Length: 285
Image (cartoon, rainbow, N blue to C red):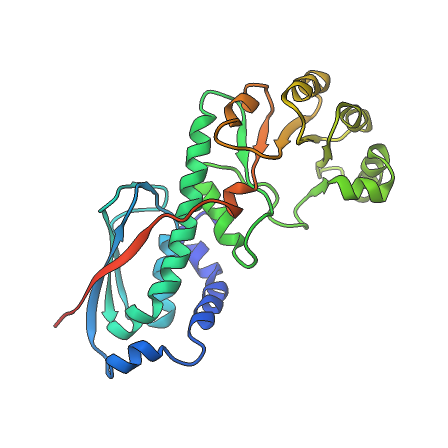
């Protein structure tokens, strides 16, 4: 999924669904004013500074409408872009350019926004050992795009879905009866090569998780003071992850406590879009 071309091809079905959502039978506005094939060109312009991401998806959206569309890209995923910068030019049937515009931009703006916000948090972690993780708090049917965007922004993917790994949260613990029992059941069920992560909310739960042999202990919504005590208690015998209300204002102080990972749902559920626009559409000979 890291290769842009492979990523776009694997995402074809999701892009097609997005196009079907926007064009159920026809583009009535376009068909009303453009009655036949007319070649045209339009420019993709950046309207604010940020990190561009999703160019392969932007390109693929038009290609799925018409394979003859020509797209020249002047940037790559992960590049920092500036307001007013020309990012790409798209040439083809004007009807295709108009019909694909919103879907292509929706993907590109959303993905670039996530990459931009992720890059801002990653920069705040520079000089620490702490890595930034995403979560499963993604938009339905957008996970492949959103988690890719986190990586482009310099973050690290947590498990992709429920089949990827074992993460025992508060309700799993409640169902099992205790932290100790939850870890025991997980060890009985899973192969020895699979790590077991468990979420804890206080120091007593942390002690139980450590004694039960959890591989990763997530310190969830703990105070900075208790988090410091937990890291000392764990003493490197398990990896540590901090989660809950991670912001630009507190992420560095959390990293300085010495946790291995910080996870933030905001990367995918709250990142603002990067403003981009298709402009200067005109017919060509």
